[in-house]
Image (cartoon, rainbow, N blue to C red; front, side, top):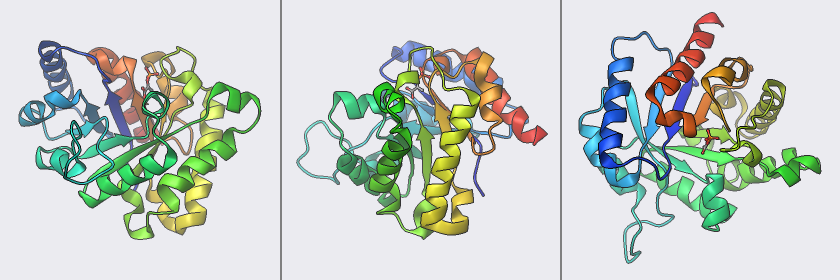
Length: 257
Ligand code: PEP
């Protein structure tokens, strides 16, 4: 069964002291709550192992990236297997910042998804179009190409629900502009139909998250889309109260539906 998920991408933010404080606040706020949503946090990589040891069971740990290769002479890289060995469960792959700033092609993203699944972890595969691609009407094709390259062309039916898709229109990330509730649902339905073509009924087990300037004030509207199973949250995941409000918005929708 697909899960409702809220994942927080902290990017390259927080000192170690701030990170510990944020985890403490989130732990306090979530403990004992009847939350019908999988909560995932992706702190900076150097903090992962230490954060893992104090994390309540209802919060899962994610990494923001991993190597496209297995172990070996790859200075500065860390493998999906290493992340698994310190208790990481999810790895964000193909975030638009990595595609744009570190030249991650669909081929590299595909290799990373493979590494993540081989390590027994879940991949959060980010896809999404630029503003120029949307304005020229190519957004559905762009997302189709990304989904095919890193997901449906290489991952078999039996592993398909180990991939979570995060639709993140590039023009909405960190800009304060968000897709309308209708634009989000429309693209999520498109993604679901691509997964349906590839995997049949397994498609309904795959979680599809929306990301791009989700805040407490717009979360509930976005999450009520039939094919929207939660969110990947950047800026608002750095404030425990805001992140908690977004978790609650997703969780409440589940209860109501
Ligand atoms: C992100 O970086 O994945 C993201 C969605 O960022 P923000 O919520 O800040 O737009």
